[in-house]
Length: 414
Length: 146
Ligand SMILES: Cc1ncc(COP(=O)(O)O)c(C=O)c1O
Image (cartoon, chains in turn brown, blue):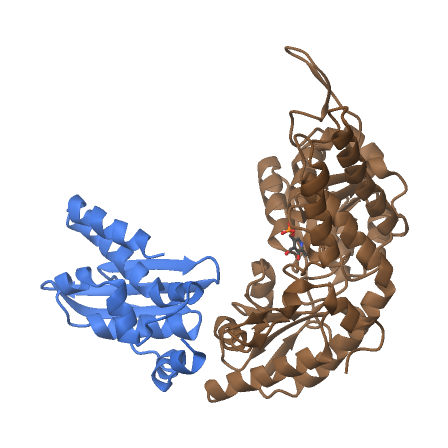
């Protein structure tokens, strides 16, 4: 019953956590991958190997340990460059996560480039981390924040983007390549093309796309790109910001202090070269090194295969869940337009009650507003339940999930 | 606590047919709060007469536990002495709901109504009765709930 594309059994063996039981004797069915993915033993080992064998600060000392840790840390940068096809490795900055990357752009680029009466365009299906920094910036500058709406199929209404671009006042368009609630895959290349024609900068939030789709930065041709390691088998506390070199060179540093300087005098400081200008202080060395192992793991499977597996599993799940009486599904019905994320409501069962009930059967899903309250308002709901898949999930697990939804219906006498 | 014990007939009934749902014009006490984690919202209105709860109503949206808890709380305090209402504890609420062993994530749902009530009483006692000493005690109880 496993999907045909990848060898799930051998993959599952690499994830120790998938062997644990919850609520005493229930096998764990982990369907909360859009929040964070599980980690394979290779990632866990690589982190403990660093602490056991060559723990040391990077870029500073000349001893052997520091040489090893610096090399391992910088090797991750090379692997990221290869993974998302970035030409120049110095354009890749390690940060804490997507949230920090977006805040960095809003602070270091936004405050210099967005002025009174300018427009920043975001969308109705953004995560709060791609809304709040722009609210703060536009309020501070007397600029305007505009939203590309979401249609009833859960897709962006791109005509609205044209209208905003036609004003000639847009400085930045920022949007997620895949919605964390609806699973919608944005028409990323089309949006970027429209913006470039008008000379407007584009930021792509890749938090949900990079873990599940093949992403090629050179082909996309955007200006800024952000994603998080922890949603793609890597550790928490590591994220990546990519931006064009000429933009990074003209941006002011976000954090200042050690490592990001060239020379410090009593009253003057000059900045270090890229990427170090934006990596102040001791970074999250162990987890950046652990992220390397995650990239290797995904590379070995191949992102095309990851996507194929998820399409097959999501198709299967959508088919089964549509047959549950009282189900309401959100997001595009067309499987080619969505990732492995299914948001839904079941009758009048509140998502928190539903999550509590199916948790008893060992199933971990997310319930609530998913850090997307603007989208919740658009959908006219206060919350949804969300099941999200990854490489280790199986059709058998989907069956357990569907049985559990039916048990919830019975408990609520639906 | 298993779901079968939580989602008993009575909880579902109060969730689907909440008693005392609605608003009061110019209430003596009016208080609103939400649980930022799950977005549950609750607003409570109370009228007092001769130191008794003459009327109480609530509006809100959220899970079965939070909404049933609020509705049952309004029934519990209707017509009662203000002193009784001031003294209500977390245990009283859970007892009233028949939910004794809720986990840490869900107990907040059950106690949101008591939190709103206590903050409402706090504002009333401090602003209208000018009794800052008792008010501070009530506020401390409210913020200690979760
Ligand atoms: C689309 C999207 N953007 C941004 C974020 C924020 O990522 P992080 O919490 O890793 O900073 C998330 C994570 O939930 C997300 O799904």
